[in-house]
Image (cartoon, rainbow, N blue to C red; front, side):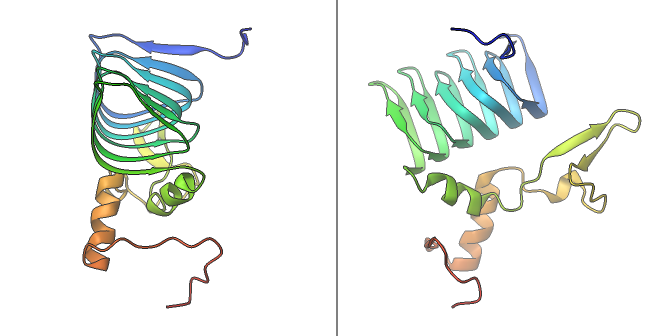
Length: 179
């Protein structure tokens, strides 16, 4: 059964985008994206897709190449043609024989909590069409788009420096002032 309000955006194989993409519903990307991709519904990255940066989606099916940090809240499927290099945070993971994955993965009920800890500095942005400047959605005009980490990898790199490369345990209900 199809919901008439649920639309799907399709970006063809000839599309090349540098920057941010934000969509509320489902999407299919067949082309190249360098930057941040946010999709509220299911995102399908076909065999012809090439993604570099940060991907945040409700669900994700990867069939192409991605050098990206990925947060897929409702699950992710790596298809046989998938090639993923990066950090992955998802509640469920399905890997088809032939898929390639290199990186760090957190799967299960605590994955979104781990992703939330990593993404603390990432903000949503909107474009003022009259001035064509990015401003944070929360209205704080002091921030500049260049001050926001461009990927989870950048955030993780900052955390590694602070912890000498050691993993930082995440405890539910931990007191922030405890050492």
